[in-house]
Amino acid sequence: MIDSIIPIVGAAGGTGGMMLWAFKVWFSRLNKRLDKHEETLHKIELLLAENKGKEDLVWREINTDKVKLAKMESKIDKAWDTISTIASPRISDLLKKELE
Image (cartoon, rainbow, N blue to C red; front, side, top):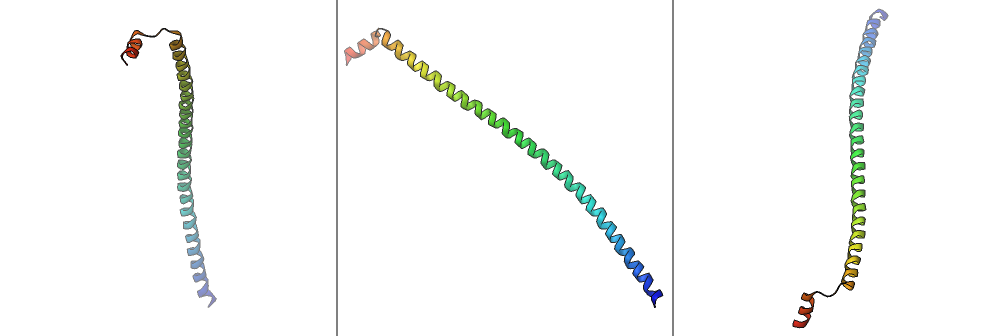
């Protein structure tokens, strides 16, 4: 009786061992693929972060330029106000007032 059980247990153990080995190989391949995908995702995240940083710098420059333009416009308006108060009236302005 024991002689007939030993081959069955051995076959079951061998089959279980083979299944365990096959699972281990499959799992290691799966881990390699997942590592590859994780590496790709990490590269994508780095590129997105780099592009976001560049975009932020561009917007900062744009906002700085807006402030500079506003200051320049203010200076130009002040200059025209000064010129208009100092300069003598134009003939066209005098004629316009006369015609009204």
